[in-house]
Image (cartoon, rainbow, N blue to C red):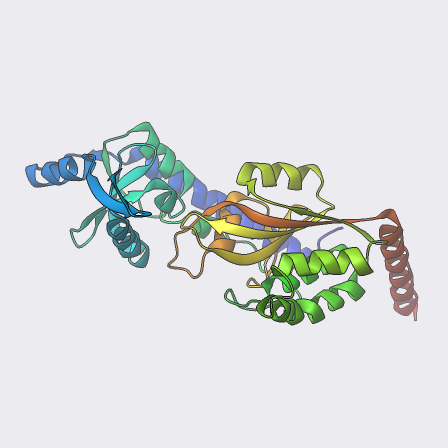
Length: 339
């Protein structure tokens, strides 16, 4: 499909801006130098680097745990995520943890999964190549998401299928978005209509979860149009491999974030991510999967794995019907243009 002259210009300007941003960020990272620690900072580093053992109770038995207490780690994560714009410097202790210096002077030890998503890949790689060295955060390297912004013309989603991040109808709306992107408009409306019904069925214990509700619905009523499969846990790498090897399959994903939160669902189809909480589709890349599992702009969680998934593979009969309808619509438009 050819872009219009206006959209082509928007795309060119976006690409030029992105390249300029990336070049500047790479230059900033290359030239940033490690900072020397004074005595006070060295003492803090020694204290936080040391392995800490604490006791906890599990099933009535007292056990010793290595590392921070759960509440200490949670408080550190909340402090850093809430005020991430004021992160001043970072030090990678190992592949799992960072020491984070805030502009106000506070220092926290935070898991690397929570920090990596806040900064560009090139700066994270600089830290990995220089463990146990303190680096000031260069301007322009604060967020991987801020470095790449999609043009507003890219695949705007139908407003009737949009909702909020906390909506329980996200499974049905995600299915509706996938079906609409495929071209199955009629069944997209059916999925939207069943979105609140699926939530009610789960609340009334008539179905184990929303994915199971829709799996049964498609198996019972749309088996002649779709092959239905329900899968359990998948790694991020496994999901990307499956999605890219057969992009025509509509995949509804119940994701798990790195902080353990789950429940929000979105759709992957044709190498794009369709999320009812977003106004447009996103490319199938790690940073946009991270965006899907975040509650708001202050959240630093990343996409960890798939808790459960529903795969809908359109059968040739449906694809032929969609192709025929699109040809008819194109013919009608062409005739109207000649009038």
